[in-house]
Image (tube, rainbow over all chains, first blue to last red):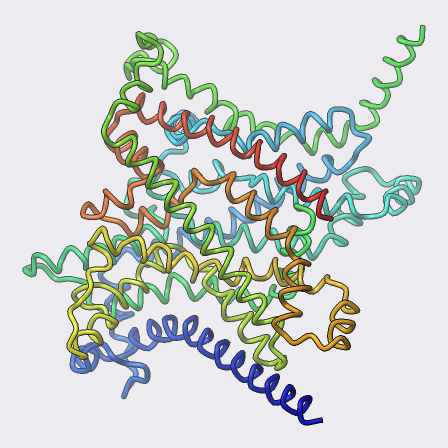
Length: 290
Length: 308
């Protein structure tokens, strides 16, 4: 009797230890983001006075955002990234679905070879420099299309889609085919609507990739007005870091840097709640099958 | 005779599938141009490039392995390889461990509200680019203005040069790596934990097993195959130590502890216009990586089958 009571209190203590650890974890994930947000709306003078330690500012100030949009390339960069995210994701999805759906048909002559090709390009690549020359030769250098076309299909996403299409019962497709629907009709009116969870997952993966495009930006874009958001954010952060050494020029203030981080990250974070329930399901499907 | 009908049949089969080939066409074109053509272009690694003549007409290097030899004989070769492997390996081990711990904590948490909040919140950094994460990390850990260092100074300590000293910079890489990816990776382990038969837990509870014993004897063995499979797959990618992260965060002062193959190829090969040398190193990495992925995938399949 005494012993089991002991055990129950032990379990309860353990529960509270777990709550405490998880609570600390929440702080570790939330505080950095919250800090950036509040620092960006704190008046610069207050931030300096309080040595950077601000969680709740005494008054809201949007000077940093005004300064950011009037003195940096962030406005054009935002438009570029928006374009790359919308047009790019649309292209990613169309190409990936069109490629994945036939691959899910085991009766298609050549399907094994094509799947092998897909996996091979995932495991082996020509390297940065030869790819750079191909992008240059296809005339994409220094255009927004260079941020979209060279990475138009992510092989792993195609495999996710293909596996999902394959898991659908054959009878579904057969019935539609007997009714006289062509392959494109079946794809559009049966396969795509039923594959919604995986399609949403893959779309979010592409969207995050497009919004955060950086490597292609530094590789292929030269003109300032075509630079994507992440590249411009890096320049803002870097210039302030270099300014610490030579003080004579005007450096982006801390508040402005924080505002730049907010502008660059909040839009993509906002997308997450809308697709969260598909997304977690999608990763699980991918993890089990991939 | 049999052969002829076979051919006819397969031709019919192909004809019946024509719409599917139309669907495949854009993708095939994409792979030809942006995936296979660069493989052909990798011949730069064996050439003495002359930009006026173009890649095809430039003369072959003599001996053919000239650029590879230059790399292997150079002092940075060993440094780049050890940096790449060390950074990758520590990231894999830390990333796996932290994700398992987070998954166990979430699974053991009996408050469903807290459970949900932790999962949502830990997942958020996955959406942030490395530039954003660098900006946040810099605000906290920079030597001059980071608030962590200000706190240390207020408490009478000395500011730590996290971003500029070779003995600290790796911790920044590891720390931000875990912060960025732990929520995402934990989802996979959590999925695997959830699929363990609940009867096992009930039986263990009846037998009087406490929480730690249940975790040790049921949960961990239950997700062992997932852990091993993911670990092996990660090892296959060990040559990718994370270009974006390191490129965004490093600087000249920490090259000796943080310069990896990819950052070096970008800097020396592309920016420095040593195209042949950069291509040679890139090709070396690709070939080695191919075999690593191939071997590890076979291992993963073998282990997976044995365990499932």
